[in-house]
Image 1 (spheres, rainbow, N blue to C red):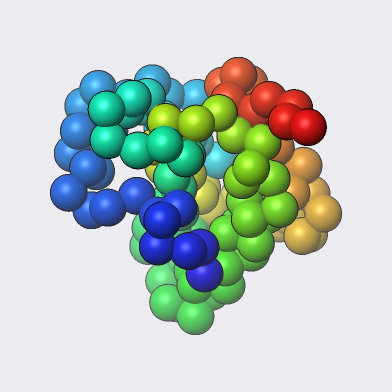
Image 2 (cartoon, rainbow, N blue to C red):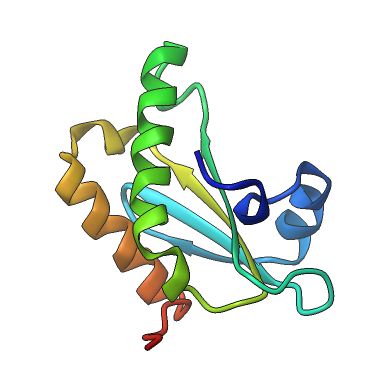
Length: 117
């Protein structure tokens, strides 16, 4: 589980969906929005719809795995961004290492990762 300070509040979902920028890959989609007024650190949410799996147990498994990957590099994501990571059905074919690579790739594609020292 991500710390509460790193989670996107549900009240912002509609704003991110309407104003956010979208990036796609065959396994994932990322919608992000810069909110300089409200937050200082990047916030994240992982969404797995019924298209990923009809079983809640499997959807929760992929959400947990995705949050574990995000937790590894959350401090490298640019500040003041709210990010919604959507899982697609093809994600079920990935191993944990492949999932990690795909998530990092989509964040690089969106130019949200920076090297912090």
